[in-house]
Every structure is written in structure tokens, then in C-alpha cells.
Image 1 (spheres, rainbow, N blue to C red):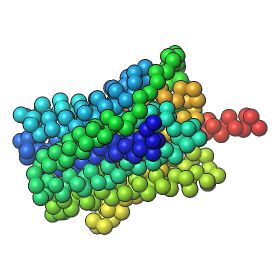
Image 2 (tube, one colour; image 1 turned 90 degrees about the vertical axis):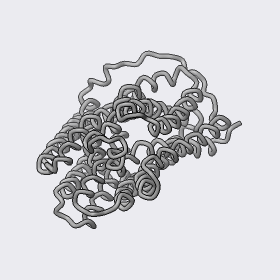
Image 3 (cartoon, helix red, strand yellow; image 1 turned 135 degrees about the vertical axis):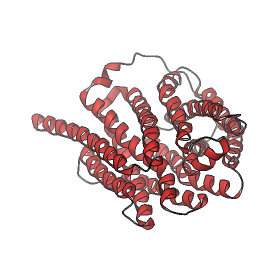
Amino acid sequence: MTSNRNVLFLSAVIVYLVGTTEFMLSSIMSPLALAFEVSSEQIPWLISSYALAYTLTAPLIGYLSDRIDKRKILLTAILLLSLDSLAIIFSPNFSVAVIFRVIGGVASAALVPVIFSLIADVIKRENQAAAMGSVMMGMTVGIVTGPMLAGILVQYFSWYSPFILTSLCGLFAFSISWFILPSSKKNHTYPHSLSCLIQANILRLIIAKGLWNGVSVSIFLLSGEIIRQRTALETAEIGIIMGLFGIGLFIGNALVAKIAKYKLQDAAKLILILLGILVALVLFITGKLPLVGDCICLLFIGVALGVASPVSTSLLAKESTKNKGLVLSVSESINNLALLITIPAFSLLVTENNLSTLVLSVILIISSAIFLVMATLNLRVRKNRRYR
């Protein structure tokens, strides 16, 4: 019988690879543009294509994982993710590289939700939250080290060094997974109600999360180029600075348990966090602060997102009751759809140095998210008063 501890550690390694693969491009966009002989504003399509594939396939794969052995899905996805990194290296042109990133997005869409579904199968109910939290730390570490490792490898070796590393690590994870991953029993099928997705509170929270998450992550992914325009820093140095965002995420994850003790509704906590994110984003984009200030902003945004993500997920889970899987998978897809839209648009503004328009866009979008959460909070307050 496979040890649950081994399964959790392997799961953390797998989501670490997903985090690294997704975020490492943020610090090497200019070197990739030179390698594929395209303009800098075209490179974000490597990120957007990945996000599009993830967006479209995550709900479907989540649905299938209840009807197909999760072990088979995970092994196939790990192998695809590993081979995808190698395929990008040998891509004859940029268009082919984008297609391979689509395959990587599909593989990641199969890995993250199915990993957490598998954990729910093998871990006792009372221990699932702690287990999932420990596995999510793997993703956070990947976000921290991905840009740093990619920047250092490109600086001292070549543009394709990060892809070789992720491919080798993926193949190693595949070989270990073959022996450790347990098989899962097929669940009995039951109808899912799509009507839960149009309930006012659920719809507001899904849209709000997509808005603030999409904007915040997009600015982070483009922060390397923003800093490059302002400074004469090398690629490796920019990668290290961007790693502060991931460190902030790690700190934010650790603070969730303490913040949960405060007697304040989750929606109210989320509103305060989003206000902090808005201020930090505006300060970073406008460039009014010195480099140290920009670093502090990236760190703070990471901390805030590290808290906001589980708080908002908890809110959605409480509102969706019996349809948690469906609601959370759709929310994940909306998050990636927001990235798909905002990354190319924001990248164009950054390339043209049109930061004033970028600031106005960020203020408008984050403010809209705050108002949606406020509407949810007001509705909950009215319900509480009604039941008193």
C-alpha cells in the first residue's frame, strides 16, 4: 500500500513543476523574442495560449476524472508536460512553439485539479485541508523559483536551458509516479446542476475573482519587462526580483490560518485585501518609487494574493454547497480566461510605455471586483438580519 506521505510529497513535486513551467517565462520574455525572432509584444502569446488551453479543458478534465482512473490521467499529463518542454526547444518557428504551449496548458489542466481530487480520495476528510495546503506550497515554491531559475539559466547558459531542466524533472517525476501514484475507484455518476452558476452571489464571486486575479497575475508576469524599461539590470537580477512575488505568496499562505481567527466576514476581509492590492499595483506601475519600493510592492502583492485566493475559494465553496467541484472548476477557467484577455492587452501598453492607460485600466477592473464583493457582503448582511 502506497504511503499517503509519499503521495503528498509527489503531488507537491508535480504542482511545483506546473508552477515553474507556467511562471518561468515571465523573466525571459526578451531572450525568447530574440530566439524566435519576433517582437516583444508577441511573446506573451506563449503565456496566453497556455492559459486558453487550461481555461477550456479544466472543467472537462475535472468531469472526466470522476469517471476515469485518476492515475492514468496524471501519468499521461506528466509525460505530456515533460515532452512539451522539449518540443518548444525544437520548434522551427514561433507559431509552432505557441501550439506546443497549448499542449502544455492541457497537461497542466489535467494535473492541478486531478491532483487535489486524488488527495480527497486517499486522505481522511478531517485531514484534507492540511494535506491540500501542503501540496499547494509546491505550487508556491514553483512560482518563487521558476522566474529566478529561468533568469539565471538564460543569463549564464542559453534561452532553452529552463526548458531542458523542466523536461528532465518532469520525466523523473513520471518515473517515480509510475510506482507511487495509487489507482482511484470510479465514482458513481450523478447529475450536476448548472443552475448554481447563475446564482447571484456565486456569479458575482466568480467574476470578481477572475477580475482581480487576472489583473494582478498579468502585472506580475509583465513586471520583469516593466523593471527592465526602468533599469539596466541583467536578466538574472530581474528574475531574482520577480521571485519576491512568489515569496510573498508563500508568506500569504502561511498567514491564512491566523487571519481566519479575526471575527470579520470573509467578504469583508477580501475587500480590504483587494484595496491593498490596488494601491500596490498603482504604485508599482507608475514608477514613483525607487527600485526598493518596486520590490516591496511585488512582495506585498504576492502576500495579498496568497491570502485572497484561499479566502475567495472558501467563499465560493460556502455559497455552492453541493456543487463545489463544478463551481470551483469554472472559477479556475474564468481566472485563466481573464489572463488570456489581460496579458496581451497589458503587454501592448507596457511595450508602448503607455503606463497611464495601464493604471486607469487596473483601477477600473480592481474597483469593479471590489464592488462585486461588496454586493455579496451586503446581501449576506441582509440575510443575517432577516434570520435574527
